[in-house]
Image (cartoon, rainbow, N blue to C red; front, top):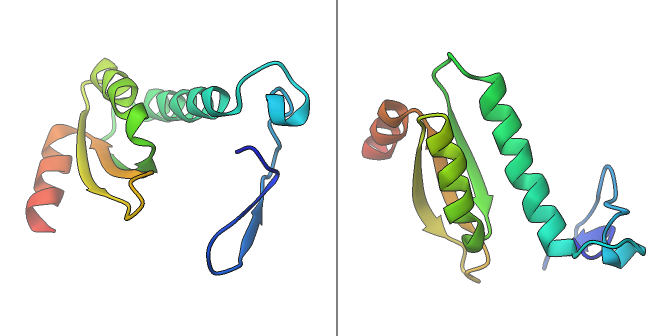
Length: 110
């Protein structure tokens, strides 16, 4: 997230709700990609913690280099992580993270 506004090929643009001002691109000290990766992993960890005791499954598109860390976070909560597909440009991987029975059964159906 090097820029406050990101654009896709169709010309649509999206503003961040809260810019990461601690990042180098905003004059901060932290590498943009590392900061965003930590934010994403931390957000998922907090979400899983809040959902302990419930059956759930989360679908996310994430950079491939986050998969090993996300798998460790999933294991922390006895969850399963499955890679589903990869974006055409290879920059993102679709993953399902959730209780093993839910992730496995949903994948079998679709």
